[in-house]
Length: 269
Image (cartoon, rainbow, N blue to C red; front, side):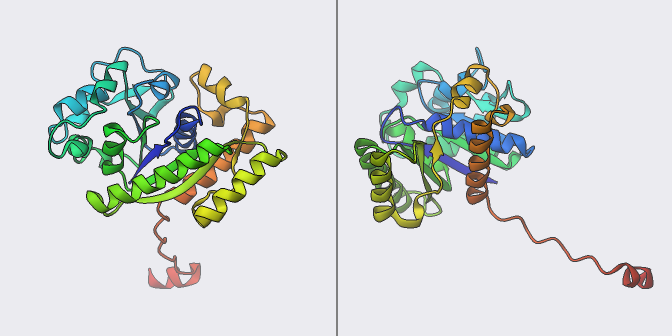
């Protein structure tokens, strides 16, 4: 079981798109996944075809009793393998500290819930407020999403620094796993310069290749469907990149016991 926080310090870089892309890659493998939408814009909630949930992440953080998040889990429109804790606009009011251990409320509310899933993906708001701190405190992996432009690259550095702060303060098992460059145009000279700058500053933390501009993303989101169901060449390329990203984030599969040769098996029986 892996809990991944997907974050950025700048809006509009496709953070929710990458979170949904990871959910799509997990869906394609029949992994049991939970998407927790901590962004008050609720883009992930809408793309997963969740409407009028009884409880939202705002309710979960308001209550924050151990295990209470289980009551807010609902089905997504993607099928039984993908569950959701939905967001709403009122969640914005939870983006400020609310007393001691305020950043641990989500972790407390989840309690043993993640053990029911192979993968938990937390979509953070595009800021380092209390919501993102809650996500990072509940996660063991963090994915930073950026675009190849000056302001987004600067935001990526801030996000990596924020991860280090949370790890030192509350969550020693947390680590930055990848910086994902979204909407990359490899032939664009300006894009290449910013990609080189990211590699120079963060080294192997930068996931390669970046995710190219792909019309399949908005199309699949409008259709409330996984990107892995789209069959255009660009969508298939993006799906393969997301598969590689998920491979990077998931722990390696345990080794399978070696089977004895047929002749030896017959002898042993």
